[in-house]
Length: 317
Ligand SMILES: *Cc1c(COP(=O)(O)O)cnc(C)c1O
Image (cartoon, rainbow, N blue to C red; front, side, top):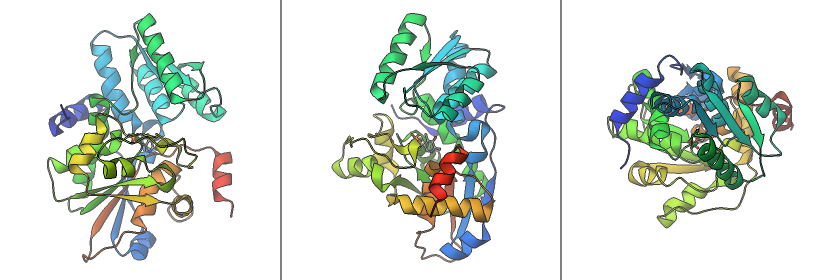
């Protein structure tokens, strides 16, 4: 029941015109520093500021074709923005359930895309239950953030683009939260170019996937406060995890300090605003050990949404 590269090719057709074909950036300094040729897949420059628009578009469009006119998500972050944006594009109603303590800037961004906001509790469990209850009452379709075949296939389109943009890539570093992005990228890469390595990256403070791979089954960790807020999911998905077990080459951890150093580097040297969740791959590339001359390595910069006040805090020395 795993997704295939065919699902990802179909997703690519479905999302064309909504999601962008994002650029790949290079940095001379980073290349000199790390001893490999570094390429950065710029999903921080994506519509709504993250790759989440890819999966959301694939899933919401399918719901629309099947007659739905109302979608609902439970996310104060990039997934909420993506679902709100796609729904607006298709003329559908969107409801987004956010925690009572959600940052105002994030809620405003979601509201700006025309979604109705509902505040509920502080845990993702409470929000998901509420969203599903509203979906059942209202005939709305619930759009999950990662554990869904159409979401995974949509995120996987990033992998197809990377293989076209850097055809002789040898390794791709991908941030891991619930695993939607990396399971899609793994499927796209391993079912067409199995020799290309795909390496997951987690914050040390949110290493649920590392522990789960070791144990051979999904492990739940306690709530975490890593600055990479898109990677705070405390357990891999039921559909995503088997894809990682089957295909993942390696998983590396990065510290909060390493994430901040990567963020500062991107901003100062590359003039790119990449949010902490998107910087973990950059941080991992900075530690990549190469035994190949002219090796080409891609860091997937998954998003760029951050407020200036947050940035100020992260950049303080
Ligand atoms: C959601 C998100 C992630 C993690 O994606 P998963 O599919 O949950 O693994 C990484 N980076 C950013 C910027 C995100 O918004």
